[in-house]
Image (cartoon, rainbow, N blue to C red):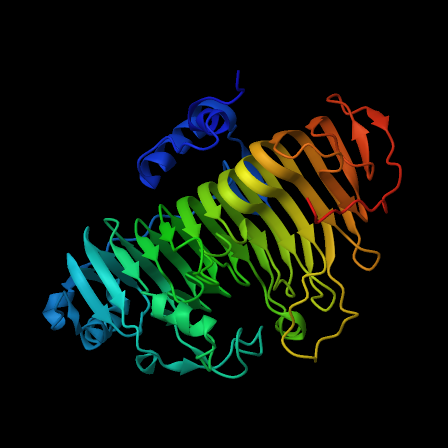
Length: 486
C-alpha cells in the first residue's frame, strides 16, 4: 500500500506508465493531490514580505483601457510573412499610452513569424488560443547586445551576445499572457550550429526581461528556445503562473526553463516544464563579475510544479551564484524521469552564498540522483577569477521527501575549502533501485536528521527522534563517502 494518493500514488505504483494522456491533465491531477493528500498549506513570512501558503501576495494585473490587434499594424499570420514591423508598430502605439494605463497587443490565431522585438512599460502581450509567435531562424535578424554586467562575458563566447526573441529592459508593469498561445523559438537550427561550433556569439534566450519590476507571465506555452527559455534578470516582483515550457529532453543544449537571475520577490507556480537542461536554475552572476555586480537572488517561491530534465536537474541553484542566493522556498514539486531532482552547484572562485533554502513536499519518480550539493563545478569565464573567493553554503532544509525508482537519494559533496553547514533532513522515504550500501553520500557536511529517514543517512549528521530528542551524535562532519560509480 502506498502512502500517497492520487497522481503521487500512481507515480509510485507505476514506475513506467504515465497515467495521463497529456501534461495538462497530469498537472491538474498533481494539483488535486496537492490539495487533498500530501501538502499542508500554512501562513508564514519570508524575510519581511507576506506570503500565504508560500505565495507572495501581489495584486492581479490591471485590465488595459485600450486593446489593439496585431493585424491593425499589418500583421499576417501565415507563417511566412515577417511581422517584426507590425509588432514594433504595436509596441510603439502602446508606449504612448503609459499615463493612461497602457494598452494590450492581441495576437490572434495564426502563425506569426518575427525577428526579435522589444516590449514597453504598461503593456500586455496577449496570445489567443492557436496563436503562435514564431522566431525567425536566420541569426542575421538577431541583433547583438553587450554581455550582462554580472557575467562580463558572453556565456558561450567572449564579447556581445544575441538578444532574446522577446526583450525588455527598464520596464514596469508588463504582462505576457493569453489563452495558452505559444511562443516558439524554433531553436533547432541554433542547437545544430552550437554543436558544430558555427556560432561566434552566445545564443539568445526566448524571453528576457532586464532591470524591470511588476512582471506577470501566465497562461502561455514557451517552446524550443535557442538558449535559456525565460530569463528575468535583476527584476523585482515577478510572477510566472500556469506556464508550459517545452524543449526536447535530449540534444537541445542549455534550454533551461526559467532562470531567475539576481531577482527579488518572485513567484513561480502551477507550471509544467520539460526541457533539455535545468527546468529552473536560480542564478546571480558569474565569478568576479557577479561578485562585483553584487545583486543576489532572494525571496523566491517555487511551488506546484511538474518538471523533467533528462540531462541536468529539475530545480537548480547555481552554478552562477556569485551575487548570493537566499530565502528560497521550493515546495510541492514532482520531478520525473530526470537525471537529478534538486541540485545546488558552485565552486571555488564563485564567492557569494547559498543560505536559507527550504525544500518541502517533494516527490521523485525515476530519478538517477535525488538531492545533489556539489562544490567543484569548475566552469569559469576565463582565468581572471579568484580561486580564494569561496562560496558559503548553509541553512538548507529538506522536509517531507518521497520517491520511487531513485538510484542515489542524496549526494552532498562539500570540501575542506567549502564545508556545508546546518543541513536538515526531516521525514524522508525514498525507494531505491540500486541495492548498494553507500547511497546516502556525504563529504564535509554538518547538520541533523529528524524522525524517519530512509534510506539511512550518512554518519555526518546528528540524529534526532520525532520529539526532537538527540539519539546519536555525528561520527565526523568530515566523513567522505562519495561514489560516482553508482
